[in-house]
Length: 117
Image 1 (tube, rainbow, N blue to C red):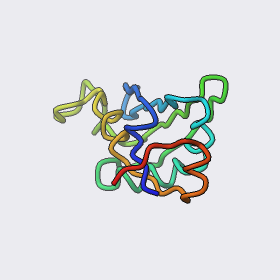
Image 2 (image 1 turned 90 degrees about the horizontal axis):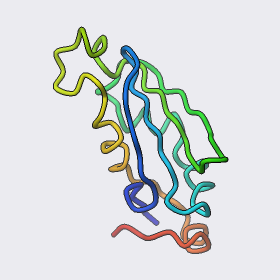
Image 3 (image 1 turned 30 degrees about the vertical axis):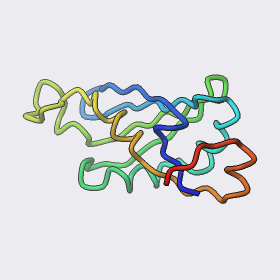
Image 4 (image 1 turned 180 degrees about the vertical axis):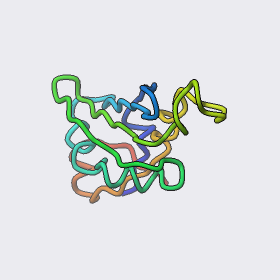
């Protein structure tokens, strides 16, 4: 089943130097394990291929039902150096929510995930 992150999570983003910081928070605590399993650092790096020049670090925050990602090399040097329109990384959260993950039908149904067609 194809699941849009937009349908199961919300997100916030910001910056620190040349690194964008994106928090991804499950809308339902029952959906957090799905985020942990399918929204990996490698998958996020693939999603942002061509937009970031560095790696992606992922941190799990189970007490918040959230994941936090550091996108290195995302801001072209940072807010004071970059000529990018969004030098503070505010749109990375919206961009991450556009990602679609594939979850086996039985797992998605058991978790009550909304399907994206």
